[in-house]
Image (cartoon, rainbow, N blue to C red; front, side, top):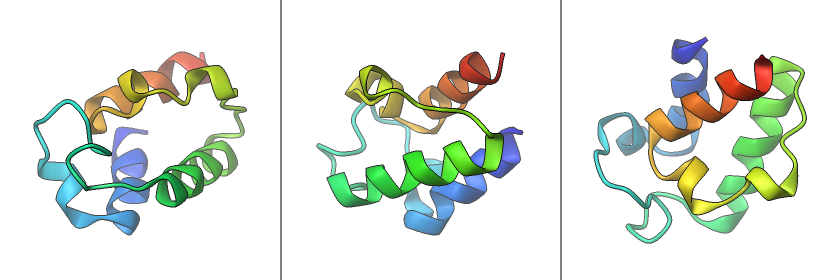
Length: 75
């Protein structure tokens, strides 16, 4: 699961897999359009719904945060 999530993130920006910061958007790795694409791709890949309340900086701070979010939503 983690490898697939990282692969999806990598499709948007290869630098994400090595990013160690805490705010990919503020640091210029993602913009809002890419974030929407990532959310859509994750929903489709894992057959989940990522409610708007989960689309916050904390859950998309870095690859580890995204992996944790998806694992939580998958169950």
